[in-house]
Amino acid sequence: MQKISPLILLPIALCLIFTVIGGCSPAKKPIRDSQGVVYFLNQIEDNASRELWQEAGESVNELEDAWARDRARLLTPRTRERVESFESSLGKLKIAVRKQDKKDTLELISSMKNDYRNISSP
Image (cartoon, rainbow, N blue to C red; front, side, top):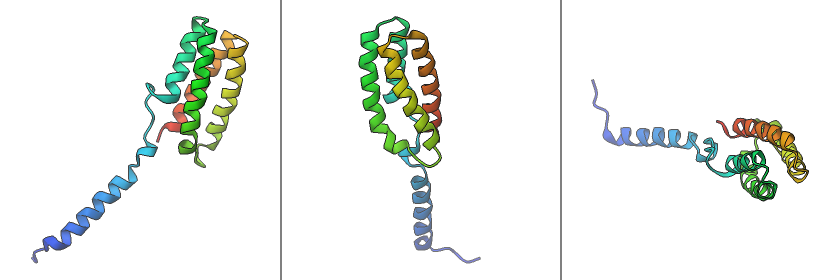
């Protein structure tokens, strides 16, 4: 058997390593529920449950900011439908919080959490 030169193995090993690393892009990792969008959804849910509508309204504003930061990164042809659904629900959520409608607010939060998990999952 012939010996394989280390000079040949090194470039092959590096190519394999970079291929694996490149395929695991940080932009595709799911977002933890303790950060960003889901954090503010949880805040709104908690405040609405306790009927703290001013705080819920402030959290809606923070949610919009967090969503604006995440949207472009999460929008792909595969996620387009969920992104549009999330944005539609966000508009409805603003109205529900402004009207202090606890039932609608909590239903929208549940739907939005589901949409967001499906958007941000690999």
